[in-house]
Image (cartoon, rainbow, N blue to C red; front, side):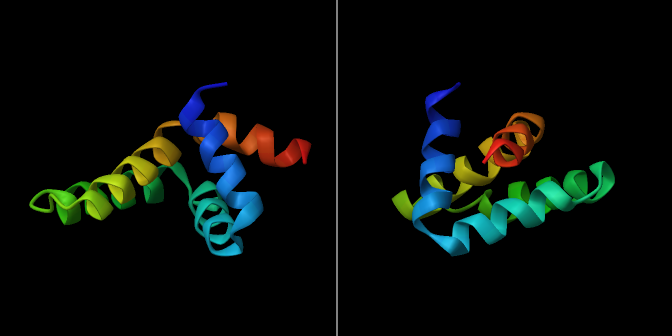
Length: 76
């Protein structure tokens, strides 16, 4: 398991808000996720703060690892 995914799973266990965000993304259809990905890319395009960079990495990791995260959540 990639360290980023392990970190997201850990964060989901500690913070219910993160769990809600991740599960909502996982429930999206492929088309909805693609639209959401475009919105995320557009939103973070001109943002360079450390918080924005971390948020972008979070969304990017979730969107690029939907199947793996789904499997991990189902196992718990």
